[in-house]
Amino acid sequence: MFVLKIVTDFASAHSLRNYPGDCARLHGHNWQVEVSVESGALDKSGIAIDFRDIKQQTKTILKRFDHQYLNDIPPFDTLNPTAENIAQYFYQQLSALINNQTVRVCEVVIWETPRACVTYSEIKP
Image (cartoon, rainbow, N blue to C red; front, top):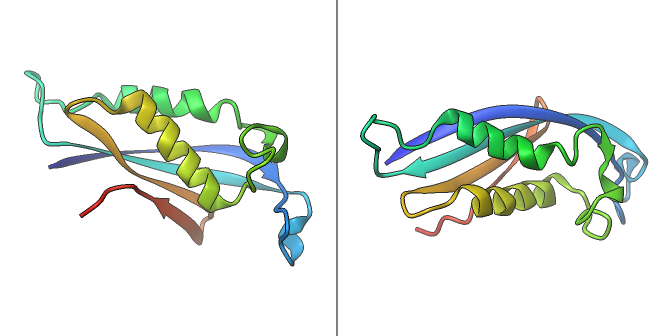
């Protein structure tokens, strides 16, 4: 199995609903996003999926959120914009764009700070 990974980032603000601490107030992050895609097959060029394609599809999703207040943008206007929910949302959106018979998103990691991240995956053993 081949696992390809890209790393990108975006900046946004949010406030956590029903949170008993400082993060209930408006604050921002420079989020780092890691996307891992897996494939057991290579094309005739020896490529599973072009890194450029993973980056483009990821940027398609991220551009909606870059330099925005997440609480104003669906689904986070109703879904609490926690790192966990953001990771799951990006995973599901990317899967719809990238997954095919030979390639699939295997995990998304969202770094809220350089020392704190969430990994989301739907891979079943």
